[in-house]
Length: 358
Image 1 (cartoon, helix red, strand yellow):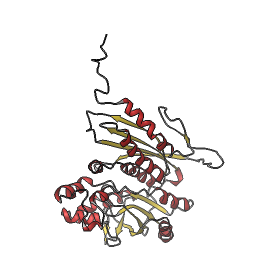
Image 2 (spheres, one colour):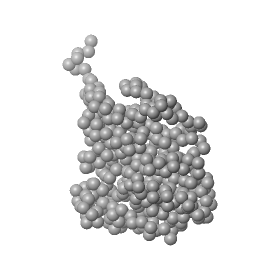
Image 3 (cartoon, one colour):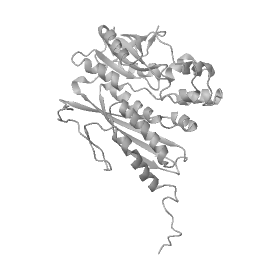
Image 4 (spheres, helix red, strand yellow):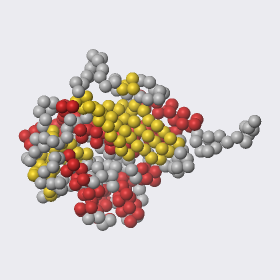
């Protein structure tokens, strides 16, 4: 018979089951605050349940020909900045944003979100901060955090490090799918402003700012107008779900919104052409906006040339809507009333696949 005094436990191997259970209890109210009327509350089960159609009078919503839309993404090496800063309460917003901003490009409404966290050590208070960020992102995008998984792997991650992945599911009526197929020359590209770096290009941003230029996260270069390097690099990715879906809901009969693009890794050159049919491109007005100060700082301190910058970063453009020209002004007026900074980025032309610049 094994001597209990000499027996090895899972905790001896670095995995603390009790800490994991404590964390689950602490995040329960955070998760519940994201639940929409379609969530069938079964907290603690092995899977989340979500009703697509529901008939309650106050929240009645049924679909004629629903198409489910799914996507997955992560935060990338922005996490390294969060580790260095000791601030992990906003990267969950980034995680949700990188998924739901992709999902709405098909015209879909986000329904629910799932997250996966691989951690070196479960620290309940720290995990609550991480999950709070995820739930904040879910609230911003009107989707439920339906479930998740936390894997404690002490032999794989350092105690202070973790990785995260997200999975979003949405729905769109089949006849309301946006795929760019009806875009035509003369349509206008409307840009929605980004919040800075968002969650892309951090390999280059860290290399230039933290290594080559030697900035600390607390440094406040004059170019950043009072903000620190750390504050700027940890700005959460903007979530465009509510304004974009409100615009789509306003034009349910006429398909005036032709294409939607989330500007992530690859910048405008890598993301805008992919939503247009063959034979079309966008002539971008290069001077129609001013890039965020963080991009100017990276370009100067690299130095990084303008072509490389535009291929790596969003350069201040977080999302693009391709719309019929006669509807551009009312759409922009609506976006402005919703607090979005937007402008005409350019015009659809024959050509491609590369963007045209003027």
